[in-house]
Image 1 (tube, rainbow, N blue to C red):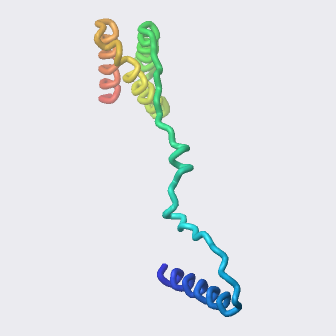
Image 2 (image 1 turned 45 degrees about the vertical axis):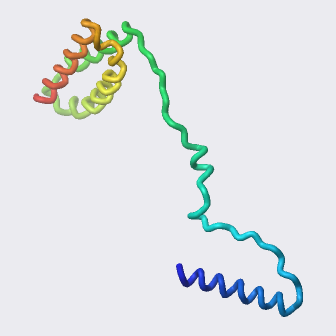
Length: 127
């Protein structure tokens, strides 16, 4: 890097000397900042925070919990290939359910159903 800076300075020095010798005034020149020192305005303007206001009704949450429990409970847990294919999707669905059930956990029915789903997944992992 020091060599390229030295070469650049030498080139500018030679150009300035030749202009002075010819008697023409040097044209004003704007020096461009190196790319790593320029502000990243385009990147900062393109970045947006992720904000969501997804809301589920109580009935929708109960329906999703019941459907998830039925799907996991009714599958053949002894079929290794079935579990290999389905468990990653179930884990993802459980993460989504965990976030959407939070506003209704204080209700006895929803809290009991979610506790049952969590216990079901614990038993699945133990098998």
